[in-house]
Length: 204
Image 1: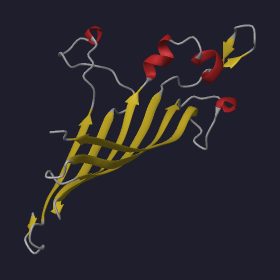
Image 2: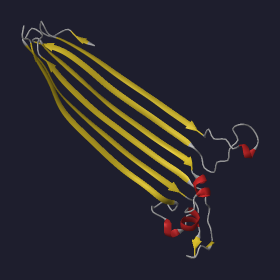
Image 3: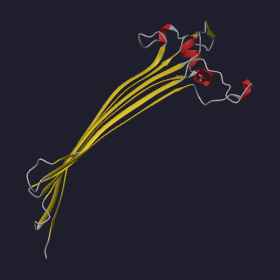
Image 4: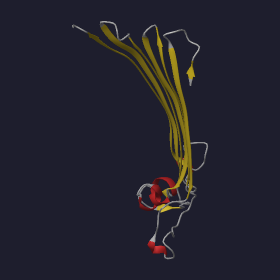
């Protein structure tokens, strides 16, 4: 995009872009030869799924005013991911699930009243990023040449991770969901700002 209504010896160019992508999948690439059947035969106790979508918008603008050159670049990015996974294998090989989460333990290693040991993982990730940069360059016919600029970026990452067991005993419940025994709920925010410059002087 070009604007041609600026005064003489001035110009402005702008380039805007937008990119998006969505990925949706169901099932897994696992295989269990012990089950027999075809090459994709596998035993899962919960549905496996992935939904992943991102969008990115950006703009770059360059202009010249009175011999000075200006450049601006900015972008916005967001990504949203939701996934579920059958995590029952952990209950199979872990030495902690039965004695601490799905069974009654008398303290001497004797387990009783064991519940459903299947396990499901549910996770979400939401990522956003903003960045802006502005640069100014002095006219080329000046004996002293300089580039001066500023940059700033903000990144936000919010995520949750739930580990659920249908047969969870009552004393191990962490959330309002009666099946959750392990829960992560995070929100991270990073910001950075920088200024930069370069100066040269023609001696001949």
